[in-house]
Image (cartoon, rainbow, N blue to C red):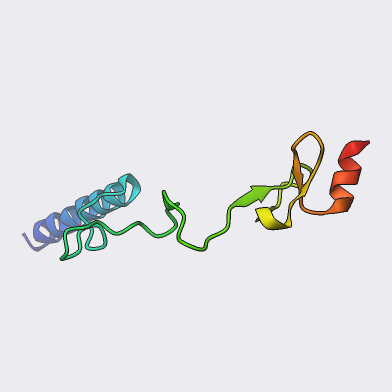
Length: 94
């Protein structure tokens, strides 16, 4: 009888872990972070924001190496492609 109780407890723990794993993978919105007291859901950690913050600068990607950098630092080619440096713009011209 003692082993039967332990088996039921173990089964309950396994089912609880499976449900917790499934809800974490599905991004369940029942988490405390998703439903604060104000009723307005908070953005998830690592989630991209839909609108830029005031004062935030647009980021662009170098057409040669793929690095992201602020648009104010871009070196623009005649074709409209943006590069992170004059050297990468020159290398792309060949």
